[in-house]
Image (cartoon, rainbow, N blue to C red; front, side, top):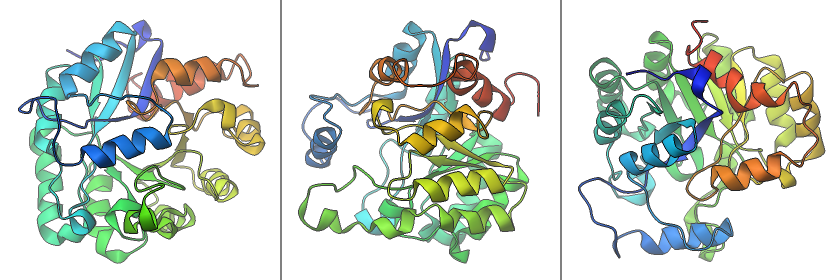
Length: 296
């Protein structure tokens, strides 16, 4: 069972798994943080989705999606739920619509590197999600380089959160989280030192949008996903570059479940993206990046 790209309307490269198939929905650790983030996104009442629930949701909408959690053990003191292995195993059961990513906090050191290799070789993960702000590290900290080496060795993708974040937003002290870690210029160092590593800069990178565009322009293997913002708020220069110089390197991402693909696509239809560019952003660029078209 594989993804049939020709039958899809879109590929969402940025969705979050927030609960395990082994858990029941209801009050529990982290719900206050989850509700605060939903408030930041003006999303109303948002439910937590398991991997099978995401698969059903996207299958009904004729879309595929990349799924992941975020391992922020170093700062939060909590293990990721669900774990990477569950996400990969469940995604494998829905391989017609889902692509699994893993997330490993770079502070895990050598144990994290071993785990990354195991997840790739035994569970088929296709990339790794990094969230420098919630993981508390600069992407160009050499502590993380052994992880990048494993990702690059296997020809996979590293996706970095960039810019402002809903995590901790509006809470006292921002929950202790520091935005400085998510300046995309720190990822430029990674792209320079790992030239074969394919990288996605997640989100319009407020307040560093120009920096993100510069990195994607300068480094051939750096892409930008458009998740986490309603397109009606995209800055003009992002739309300009998406229409022209970066039309082959910009990707559709929603940040589901905080932003649904319906909400995102509805607003995307109203902004000034050229007709010939829309299918590139919605599907073709991601299909090429992940080798779903037979191209490298």
